[in-house]
Length: 399
Image (cartoon, rainbow, N blue to C red):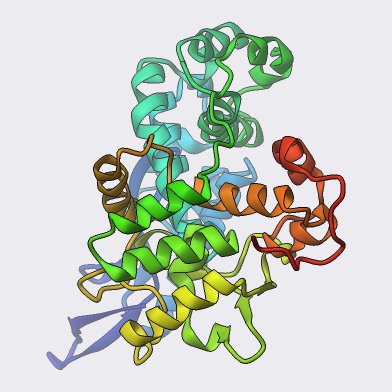
């Protein structure tokens, strides 16, 4: 609620708490809301007072509910609105062609929905940034001049053909557009879903295949990399990543109370996303205990001398909490360049741990739990060539 000052009949000034979307307009309340990308501000016949603020908020909620259920009839609001004709075109019986609503408006409205979802904890901040990027970078420029009624399967397929990305990336780009279509169907702006007549298997054959592959670092490469680290905290981070298989976000979120040197265990129970936001792992398998390998323990003991008096285990060389993975990526790229090592992204350290442990004969049945996979499928799919068939049933081999 916002707190507004208004002057009563006696000239006395007092505080007035107003719900979201409710404002004072002279002696009457004004309602403000967005529908299909357009902002509406309509004055009510409700007189300004603290008790009446709740009535105004209820009226706003009813209007929005009727719009969402496609049951908005302006005749129902003749007494509550000072100028009901301003919303005449929203009436379900209004003769204007609903399908002419611009896709640009609907995409803007969808982005606002994502922002509200993030504010209420129903959407991760990383997902919000992703959808915001694809809406502004890909969807709005392409569909800028189209109405929702003009959108059809051919146009969507033509759009997909312009995207030189992997199947996974294209699927992500289409998420907001599919949501816009679903909302338009619900609001009866359109009667047919254009995605229903698209054969996804056909366009997926035409897109590029991701060339990303597991390309682990060798032990000798790791030693060279460490020797070229300017900062000890970066070296300890790299060593811990290599010898635990932990994800970058998990290492960023790691705190000293997660470390048990006596039992030689690392308890993984959280991850850090963009803007330093800490959240729970996506799956139950993400919460796990990792057996501390000797070299991981050695690196963590060294790190304890640097940040043992802090909450976080790994901080930047200047003592700050890492804000996002790309921040350490800047150091990583420079280190590899100086070391003369072929560039692979820092996530390959996780691949290196898994492949190295498999090569030493450690069991996939144990290893998948340690790295936070839900089952062995990813292990066999991505690391089959590293599996030593004479392996152990426990993770005991390190070298």
